Length: 191
Image (cartoon, rainbow, N blue to C red; front, side):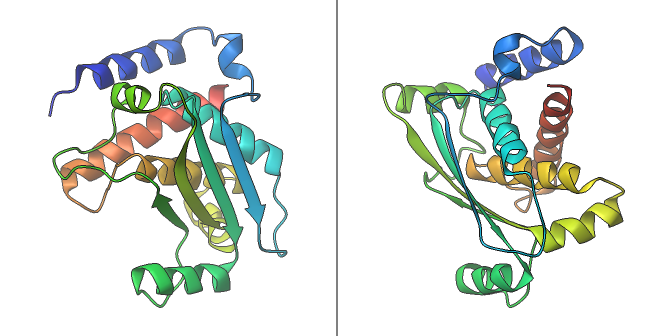
């Protein structure tokens, strides 16, 4: 599917990466964008302000300026319970996403233009992301990343799932999602 608004958005993101970053994108403050975080584990310390800031940057870069996002931080036991309850898989995982909007089978992902048209006047709950901090810590070592870099990757991965990207559908969908992840992560890390 050719979506000119997405191609234009991706071009703008690439140009911004190569040029100076405007002050309005550097700021983590937003009156219309809400990021709610609940930490339900005690084992691993995390900078919640940095997580909130990274979330807002990702949403802003995707053009989701009036979105509300909830993030739940859990341990292996909590994630195993959620994974078992919602996906009927009796083991832990690193991230789960629970979108509040449903997408047409024909649409691969929600376009920025469609999202803005639907939500021009109101803030809409985008969905919930659950991140397993114990899994993130293990994976950071395996992937050669810092803990916060791994958290940032899981956050972006979860947000993309919320707006309709799904790497499990096909090889093409997986390549498309991985490309978008790399673009967002590269840009967020420069802000």
